[in-house]
Image (cartoon, rainbow, N blue to C red):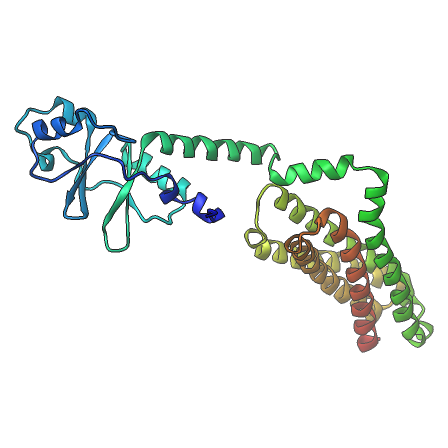
Length: 321
């Protein structure tokens, strides 16, 4: 039977049932005698049970130092760290550390004792998580192997990965030409509109590229899209607003076209905001489909952003000029 990936990350995966048990009324002499001649997977702590419910843990060092007549109830920690079987192993390990215990108890929803996560397992979890955190800081993850392979692959593989997306971009250029042609009358009526079309498209691409780079880089170090979604959307909106406010007086003063200036500024605000959303959603979508976003997201996002930027610009210009 295969083990589910999430189960490998849970406290139950590190748990053992082969630990010494005692009742609250058991004496230290009786507990020490029960340990003799028996092999446990971990004897660092003795689980004190009432029926099948955990009421405390007795540390082995406390048991060895206790007088013969001392009871488990008097020696035990009656508030030991306890977790459910499905709790993430790292959270479980840190709970034990913060509580100052060597072992961590695992109980089910009804409070029944299931077993202990022993000290070596807790230490192993903390060391593994520490190493993973250091790897992320250094940019070394499982995804880094794929990035390394992509960098060293032969020319034939490079063409196979890149050309399809570039052909999509070429088709997008044809569609863009058709869109511009559809607004031929608007351009003839006010040729100044044509002056700013390349700038609108470029700025939207630039804003989108910044966001896309951040998202793809985040994926490579394990940062999910949800962690940056809202902040990046707000950033794109603010960037678009600032660029629009900077451009508006420049166009009015240089070309003396207030309506054109307003059209360009509003289109720039909208295009930059939309580009941010596209630059986040496309890499995430490609990643979910198992496609390397480093190859596909750039050309595809550029095509979509360019087409939408052109549509937005002419729609705004047609309404205001």
